[in-house]
Image (cartoon, rainbow, N blue to C red; front, top):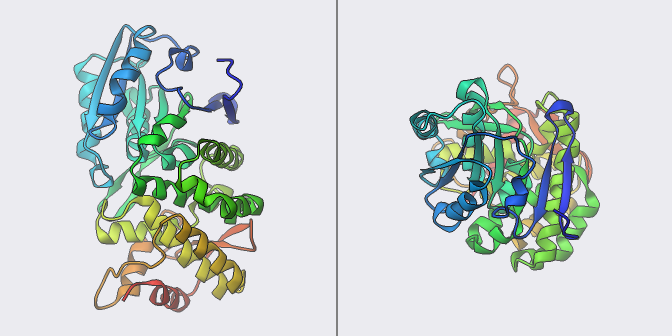
Length: 369
């Protein structure tokens, strides 16, 4: 593919290295998949929302390379990220006699990508897969880096595997059909990259948020590329989140508690993360790491993206206690101690604990009611 506007971001992981292709009109172009290994069959995994728009177009793009192209359609929504729906993928693989060279294609948002990756990691102990993310959130975050998982009623993404795709195909044209709420949810994951890694990007977002909300193609292309570059840099140093990669979870400890506490699907993931970033910023201030000016700067940016800044009440009797209970199930917790990603000055993040009493004050001050 020689188009001058094609952007490539490399993920450097030795023999598991791959690249992210970013441009419009990519996902249904057969050349996007020309370098993939030969296989008798391919399986497209999509959902009831994305499938009607794009599944047939991807099928046609793959038909010249793979003699058999099958499709499985999952229900849409975070609440469907379960064992039962994961089994729909395995059912399709087995019913169609798919072998270990079969390539899976994740066509959809973060839920489809996570479930397809987990299925690929598990089927016959590992088959190849390709990410074809169709939401902003998936393009800037969940499709990159090899995290795959399903949810458990007690905790989000607690059952899964690290498993890298063969490549990621980010077609910017798919963002044109995103509902406004889904676009804003993606901007929640976009915003996090500024505070944790790139203060200049944070300033760029402040200056260009209106253009992003209006879906300006050049602005969207810039954020997808820059977010993927930052994530590639982090993942290249810490693939399995033993240290540095945890900073990508800024806002997620609080956000995952919101999702689990309300019931998956009540808030979009990016909405919960945005609210979680507000809480994490306030915690950073209470720890003496940032000042009130920075906290308010981040809150204003989150508001401009159309995202919530007040957390929901998860318990009428002890709201902060319910948050703490859920956050102790977070993957970063160690021996029952909750670990938070906090901002250690603009553009820098660290992972550390905080006293329960301090966290309670943050939750009480940041929640509705």
